[in-house]
Image (tube, rainbow, N blue to C red; front, top):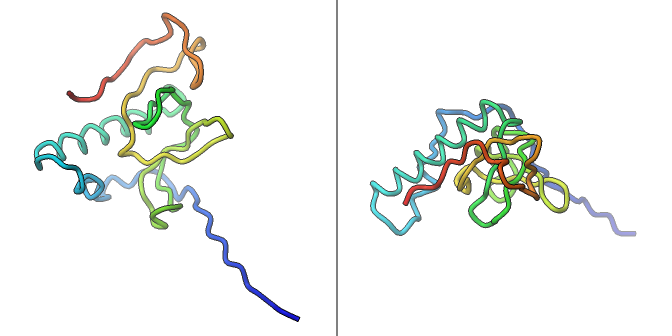
Length: 133
């Protein structure tokens, strides 16, 4: 008879965003000047602050997607790939929900009754925050 032990790691929301966290470390690999890295980091933190203050009020656009997604939760998530607490957003996705990290925030828009994460109608956008150029 064989025995085996299986360890399964599962990330979880650990609480609100820790604003003492070193956000800048996630931008160190960007191929640009330190000033630009600081600008990108500050921009992502600004968007995260807005969404954290009222997650139900915003839809977010992630850098690798054209769709705006509803936000279910914002906080420190300790799941894959870091396995330590990192600021993240739990967002609606095609298969349910998935965690997105703060540095992937591209834009946010105010959510209205007419707008959803997967379908936007004309006139539904009240506030759009565009990425830096």
